[in-house]
Length: 178
Image 1 (cartoon, rainbow, N blue to C red):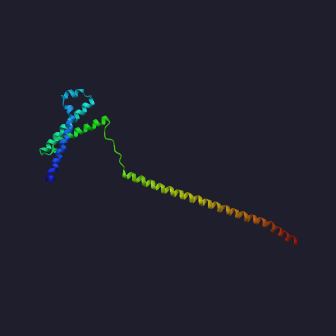
Image 2: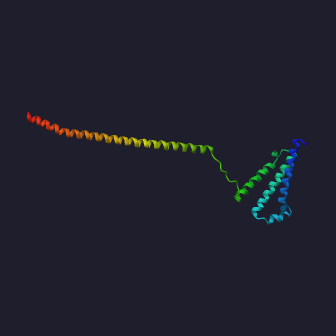
Image 3: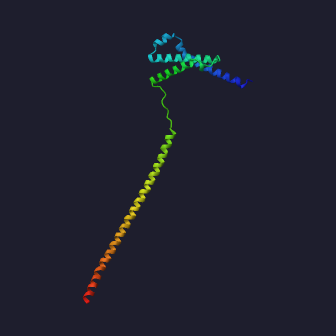
């Protein structure tokens, strides 16, 4: 029975072989003819793509080679070249309209502000509605109390005016009798 540390490299090696087989299968039509024949038949935009693809592939292979030899490729100039080629890849994607589109992300702080504002507006609207009802009720009460007071005044005045002539008559009668 093999140890687990040996199984991991064997699995990785099998995966690498499978991927290399897929790459070889895709590159076979391109590599079966001289590169000048293939290159001359391509439109300009595909020529650029081919040049970038070849440059990135060669630099990536050299990066892998450095890793297999035990040296640190991060300290080598190949890393700068890979970054430069990646910039060209981004430019090509942008020119073709294939650049990465911004993803839909939720700004949690903004969402919290919107929710808080909506809650406050709802509370304010409820407060406003309650205040409006209270104001209308107070107006109704004050109007009805004003009407009652006026009615009482009218009643009092009318009672006074009715009683007044009778008192005047009585006074007049009393004066005449004297």
